[in-house]
Length: 273
DNA sequence: ACTAACCTGGTC
DNA sequence: GACCAGGTTAGT
Image 1 (cartoon, rainbow, N blue to C red):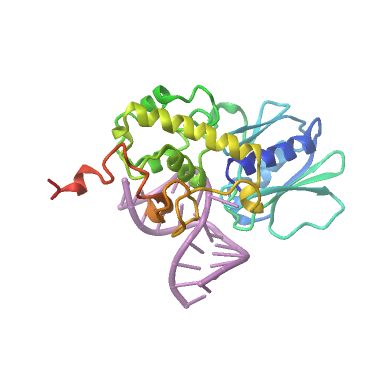
Image 2 (image 1 turned 90 degrees about the vertical axis):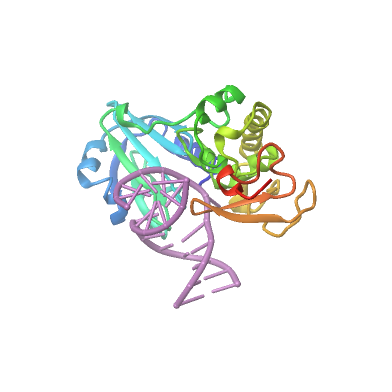
């Protein structure tokens, strides 16, 4: 469920359910969630009103009326379900908020990797880069954030301190759109490539957000690179390749991504003329 | 900068 | 049974 468009959709659901509501009870139903949200945290949030709900990247923040914050991250498989408190809990319910209007907000998370934390104030929240959709995210902004970093650009895009909100799917899509080889060392990208990349990130997510949830539903605009191994590149017809970078699948077109940098790092290029 | 770890479920 | 998964982080 959780790339940026799905999280955005989930936040809207959460916002609607919690607007002006108070928390009647809070429970972690899985030991993995209990590790970060213990009964003592539950006691702190009961009775509090949910003042506002915000999203930063793929993180969700529920600001309570005493200045404390519930911080939620779906990780790989989380989503919100909203039902009545009288209804039975769905499968994979990991965390539950009961509200004062009889509604129940449920973190449904099959893999139970999702995280719920309570912070007494907002000072310990995660440090995140600019939003992927921020118009201020231009070539100059990217250059300063990638300066001196030799990690492959694909890995850098997944680093939420560099840019907030880009996941494995849209990293592949943005690099395909910008025609950049995902293995290129970040600091090796020239201004023209950074310009295309900044534009590609914003455009890729703009399109995805306009049709949120489409990946899980399989509807809407098809993806160009992600999960298309062996299928023809929609730009040049060459087969899309799959490689593994830092343990994650990367999909890209070997033929038309990489005009702006060596396809491999100088270190492994030994032997070339 | 990569690997393992965190979890469970789906697919080959 | 083995491998894969939309994320993040701790440890090496």
